[in-house]
Amino acid sequence: MPRSRISLGVFALLLALALASLPARAFPVMPAGFPLLAETRSEPPSVQQAQSPGPLQEDIGGFSRSQLEAYADAVVKVQELDRAWQPRIDQAESEAEAETLVTQATDEMVGEIEAQGLSVQEYNAITQAAERDDRLYEHIMTLLAQR
Image (cartoon, rainbow, N blue to C red; front, side, top):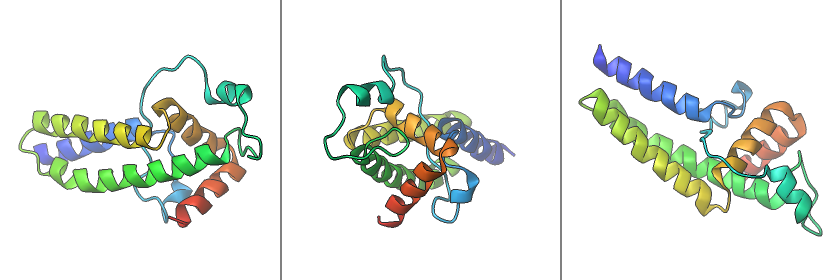
């Protein structure tokens, strides 16, 4: 059925964008995961932080507290957008329409990430690091629980 293919295609695209999101153990708090969006940057966040560390900020997993606060805010916004767009995408009349809606949703997600003061590269780096670092993961979960 085309509708199933559209939904699965959208889900697969969002997962492709979201892969490297926090692991499945986050599902009680984060049911849809977090988009991982492609973008290039000349220096990774750890290099940028080494150049300008905050005076009273303790790094967690190589990221400053302000970066993690911005990340948690971005995750909430991205999840809200995902929930808002998914019904429209599911109701698309064609695969082309669904793809157009996914592009629009992704653009809005990128805008929300950037509005929180993070680049997509930084957002992705934090997402990926949280998969490998339990302390970072737990800190992010605490921040999300506060929102």
